[in-house]
Length: 492
Image 1 (spheres, helix red, strand yellow):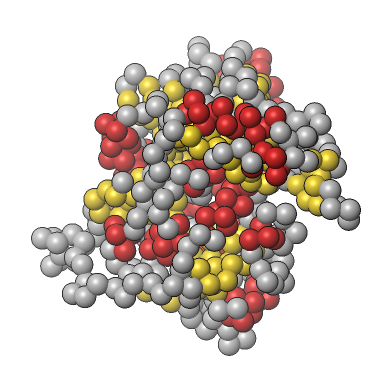
Image 2 (cartoon, helix red, strand yellow):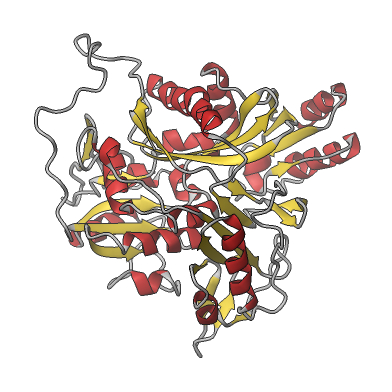
């Protein structure tokens, strides 16, 4: 639903009576078929985004940086993007040649690296040739050393805003400053200090790597010896590289975990249906944390009253705190929350759609995803996000993740996969592809850990579950890992 505009902490002196004044004339509505979009990312989340973008009458051409992806390659084209992460000048040339009007960045890594800034021409990330300006509620390309304009609008936050996810120390401090309810915690950059703190506590704690770890940087040791081992592995052995060089140690909150997503243009929030992400590898919320083994949307774990409280106490204060630091946030803000006896508390922030939650969200979305993204990016003028149609179909969606054998530690590659067509013959089912590619013979084979997202809609979560698991049985994927309790009352 559309929420009231976020209060501007530094409003103009004459705007107090009208905190979000509308322009005298409404913006010109977007024209059908005129918006060329560049989509970054190669997972099931991006496959779902491309599938939904394809339904928009506003879409011109859709380009992807993963043309070999069996799902994205079929939805996007006709040209691949001739660039590498080290060659932003080539990227700017491509964007100019193809008249890209909007870039959509799916994964967290390029957001943390500053790809949004590069595309907008506000940060070269060490490469020469990109410069630009940000004006008012919109973004306008500047000039480059080669005379090329960068992409005018991006759905995704800047590098500074992306620190909400890429730097848990920064995120934790911002939550404290904004009075966002969260777990008590401290950060440590020396292993000895971290161990001393753990030894001073009498209850089990949560240990988090401060950097990006693809969902695998949170540890829940039950004993002090286990906690010491986690610190040693992260900070001494550097098992997760620089991401684990600093850790955040927090109290362990008890309750139900939910995911709440909001789309924002930096001033207005639109809160989407809440989801439940199943992060543990095994049934019954057992085993190691993963990037996500399934999702339910909407989740019955949180009611409308609690959702409004999350907006009021977590989402709005966070966006306002960033603005006080001069940081504009545009895109998706994803709050991972624990519903405790004292109310919702923030566990972490992510700066993009969750995976697999995105798949469960988008299959129920009735409105135009591209229109929403254009509005949030500033392309349609002030107030456009408030007018965007983000309504959803009734019922529920369940997403099941099929992972390669050996996931998460050593996923097997090259495992043949068949039967996706049979799975999609089940009513209400879409299969989105992540870590899989076709070989020379056309056989689909696994290339990584989380391989398929089997997503089903139904009149309720029970029908959605039944359809999703019926579809999963139709897929031939030897040794695949698949939880059997996704969408039930089991949390985690």
